[in-house]
Length: 247
Image (cartoon, rainbow, N blue to C red; front, side, top):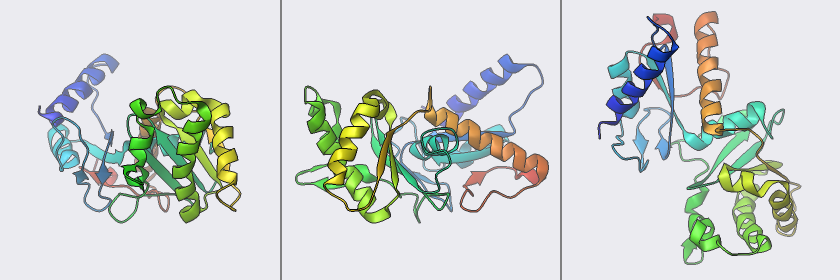
């Protein structure tokens, strides 16, 4: 499938429903995989029709500015700005869903890493399997909550040992469903693994946190364009298409 054409069609339908004569100023797109901070190239997304130059292709097709971001990092923005980590300068979001990953905020800044791979904890190896394999639905189906918490705590410990974020938020469908009870079990097990004091909370952003993070990012871009502000330190992100000053 032609993914840029499909996305362009969805945007056109949304604009038509919103009212006549409207155009897109900024498009924020969340994707699985790594988004290279300097080039915007996407790797290992696994999306049908996905392409490395998706951001550039969509910007060329729509004429709008396109901000491309990893979907877990968008959810991290939502929890930081309007969720369980509001007001915290340091935290990590552990995303427990169809895929496993993490978003990292240190000193108030979302950290992407040199190649966009910061937080790819699903690749961590535990014996013969990886962290994703430990927490895939078939692997945890029927297990008691305490055993599931043991498995989650292994990944959380890796984050805490390297980053010492002080707070870990359990997000994604799995983390949200487990709620405070699962968070408490993970915190208990983590206390026996790490000397670093770490709070564990369930994510609280309602609805789709990836969408919420994208909306917050788009609003930031719109405000920057109107008021001529640069992105806050550490919040700079890859974008294609016209710059705010050119529109």
